Each structure stands twice: as C-alpha cells, then as structure tokens.
Length: 166
Image 1 (cartoon, helix red, strand yellow):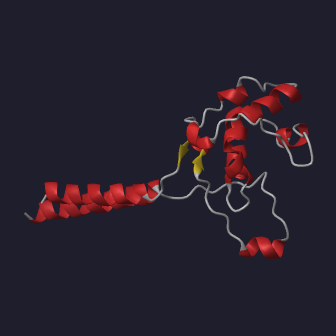
Image 2: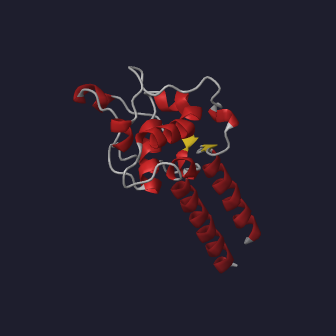
Image 3: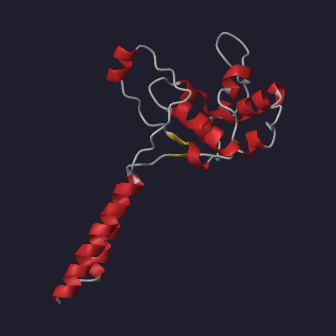
C-alpha cells in the first residue's frame, strides 16, 4: 500500500512539473524591439503577446519572400498579408507581439537581420493595412494564448492520477 501511495505522489509531482514547464512564458530575443531610454525601459515590463505566433502559418511569407535578392515588393506585401490581421496587437507597445512575431518570421524564413525594417516603408506611420484586412479574431492561423488553462489541466490531471493509483 505504501508503494502505491509513493507512486501516486510521484505521478502528481511529475504532472505538476509538466504543467509549470508548459505554462512558462516565452522570452523574446528583442531584436526588433525599440528600447527607448534605458531608465524608463528598466521600469516598464511588457506583457506577453495574446497571439501565439509559434503556430502561425508562415508560408504566406516564406513562399513569396525568397532570396538571394529578396524583392522588396514581394516581401513587403507578404509581410502585410501576414501581419495586418494582428495590427492592433503588434502596434500595442505594452506587449512583446512585434518582437515575438519578427523572431518567428526570421526563425522560419532564415531572413537576413533587418530585412523587413529596412525594405518595408510606406509612410510616416509604417505599413498601411488595407481596410478589408481580416481581424485577428477571425483568423485561424494563430491561436490566442491561454496560459492560465495549463496549470488547471495539470492540477486536475494530477488529482485524477492520485485517485487512480491510491
């Protein structure tokens, strides 16, 4: 009986550790993030992005923006097609959506550093998204992050394992 209790405690501990690891926040490399003045940026922490760019469909960009020349018209139109549905989240200076998105674009496309920031300029406000661009809520290429869900699932599964093996 004592070995069953020990096993159930080990299973519960394992489930809790998996839950903590699954809910860990993503640390962006901040390559494209504007830092501002050092004094203020040290006091201001950015929220994690509500859009999960890890599982987004990057073939929109990688199929059109190809090297070695990386034509600006193709690359910029592909960037707009991909990013415009998330414009509100990307332009929100209180989160890390822009740096996270560009990190994944560079990871999956293996683009040279600064390609999009140096080539894609339309006006003083940046790239202009078309008025008929779908909003991120209607787009299924990236899911919204539900970090608070993982610990709950882990806790429930831990209790279930505990009851099964007790």
